[in-house]
Image 1 (cartoon, helix red, strand yellow):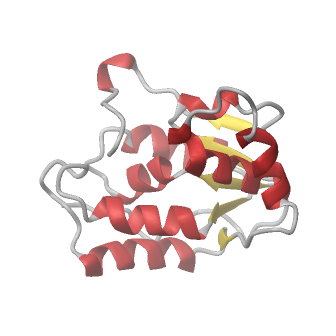
Image 2: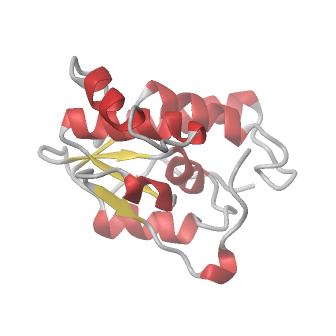
Amino acid sequence: MHRFSNSSTKQMPRGPVDLLDINVWLALADENHENHGRARHYWEQESAARLAFCRVTMLGLLRLSTHRKVMDNKPFTNEEAWRAYRNFRALPEVTLLADPPTLESSMAAWTVLHGFPNHRWTDAYLAALAQSSGARLVSFDVDFLHFSKLNVLHLKVPAATQRRPLP
């Protein structure tokens, strides 16, 4: 199985930050992923100067890349999952965002709204982290479009290649 390589053509970055959702990191990490091409196009043509993990997306990449069902019966080993994460983190344009002091209040503002669905707690965390950090959130997931005033880039893929949501 081919893995995302550690090569990059970007210079040492400064400026805007993109917080990538787990689904984008996963598509980048596995060349056999159905959305790898779209994720690569984003990385090479549309990304901000800096790309970010947070602990939730780091753990999500490790968990989902080793999940047999998610990876079409070709999961990464634990060592391969760590290697993929560390290869990304070794790139000069990839960083790890810490939780800013305003994160909880931003998250609470969205989650106390009437009708907030309980399956969006992690989305609310990522949205609040992006907003509190001044980052753009990048995802294949359309649910992030429901967060008002969130700077989000929805990576669209042809309908024929879309799968059911991840477990």
